[in-house]
Amino acid sequence: MELVSQNQCFGGTQSVYRHASEVCGGEMTFGLYLPPLARSRPVPLLWYLSGLTCTHENAMTKAGLQRHASEHGLAVVFPDTSPRGEGVADDQAYDLGQGAGFYVNATQKPWARHYRMYDYIVSELPALLLESQPLKGIHGITGHSMGGHGALTIAFRNPAQFRSVSAFAPIVNPTRSGWGRKQFSAYLGDDEAHWANYDACLLLAEHGWHGDILIDQGATDQFLELIRPEAMAQLMAERRQPGILRMQAGYDHSYFFVASFGEDHVRWHAERLHAA
Amino acid sequence: MELVSQNQCFGGTQSVYRHASEVCGGEMTFGLYLPPLARSRPVPLLWYLSGLTCTHENAMTKAGLQRHASEHGLAVVFPDTSPRGEGVADDQAYDLGQGAGFYVNATQKPWARHYRMYDYIVSELPALLLESQPLKGIHGITGHSMGGHGALTIAFRNPAQFRSVSAFAPIVNPTRSGWGRKQFSAYLGDDEAHWANYDACLLLAEHGWHGDILIDQGATDQFLELIRPEAMAQLMAERRQPGILRMQAGYDHSYFFVASFGEDHVRWHAERLHAA
Image 1 (tube, rainbow over the protein chains, first blue to last red):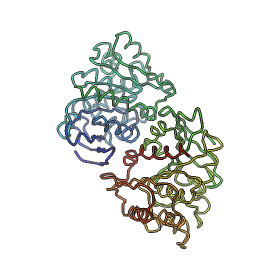
Image 2 (image 1 turned 180 degrees about the horizontal axis):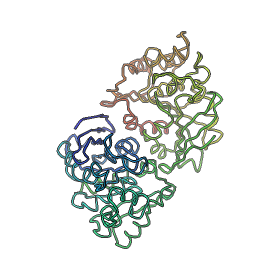
Image 3 (image 1 turned 90 degrees about the vertical axis):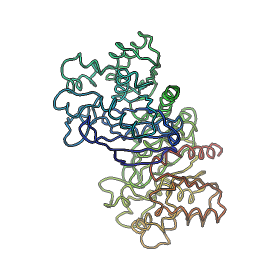
Image 4 (image 1 turned 60 degrees about the vertical axis):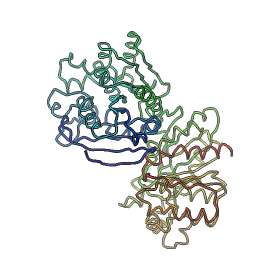
């Protein structure tokens, strides 16, 4: 693991690391914020999964989460959204290939060799972090847009690993969205039965979730037709699933929206992870 | 004035505008944050001047000031750091020309035609904002690095216009720094007597300042030799100038440093501007 940069921030440390990923078959970069509390004892870890076109850097510099993580004693990891590099398959569209991994394990050519973001987030990166950083092995997960999809699906499939979950404007039902069908078809092939492993609504309907769920959604988000929050709203209500879905008046899909509600999400996770 | 973008943020509005600048002889872009309070009554305005290589956008997306401005009822304007465009003189170096206006009125060729950031910040942009936005006409000013230099020098030369001043890692003594001598020589010519109008230490020594001054400086800033905070520290102490200079252990020159202390600066200005 190679240290790329390190900056003190709100009394803690914002680092960027590069490492060889076996799962993704190449070099991966991630950001890690450690709060001041981590100097004296291991802390819980909040995963922040980013959206389409983002690298590890966008949320790290724009979402303002470090302030809250510092106050609440959480570490935050900012993974990249896909494998990258010259030998890695890509597409000209912004929503397929590099920057658009969709947190799946691809099974189809030419994607299958590198696009294994699901295993990277669930297995490889946690192991690397736990062996090298002052972390307790207690995880929460959140994310924005495609990353909100990642957070919900990864939590729902790994309830023993993740104690808390939240999301900002998550793509909740990708098997019925233009942000999903195109990518799942490319990465996973035409058998839609396989897609259900990566659809938050389908997973929640099948497995439920042991805790409560916090979702914030901008009511004037320019991508509402692709995000389809109504699918999750209906499902949570039908299932009597504990949780909060907040339709936030006047907010769009930007980091200005994420930053505005970041404190609530970090506190949400801190309350659940410190009690764990 | 043309609206380029608008995003709700912490209950207020982050806008970007483009306008024809007579002073700079071309199109200029700036960001403006209006807090929720501005919907019901005019609010004071905090000027945030950015550093080398920045546009209007860097601080607007990375410094996290909107949260504090929302809470404290201040508008914040994020001007660009220089004129820009094809017809505007430039230099290959990052610290001269576009992105490096140094908040002076250039007198030398080829800069004099467009590089009039001092007049732009002191006169043209305030007039435009006051006539178009819900503002009270009460101003505070802050900035980072080259922008901290801009904030201090502009405040010290215009004490009736600016009621409060602060800075993050300001270039306090540019006439004795590699960040200053090169640029002043290019923009202002070789007569160093003229340079004194744009040197915070020289201006404070000559004119004093009617209020108190807040300066934050990273103790492990990678540019300390160019910033020379010791010149301002000595001068403020010698003059018994009311103020606070905080040497912040472990912090560098980045936006992670600015973000970490942004709340203190916004509160500093809010306390002084709301009382005005």
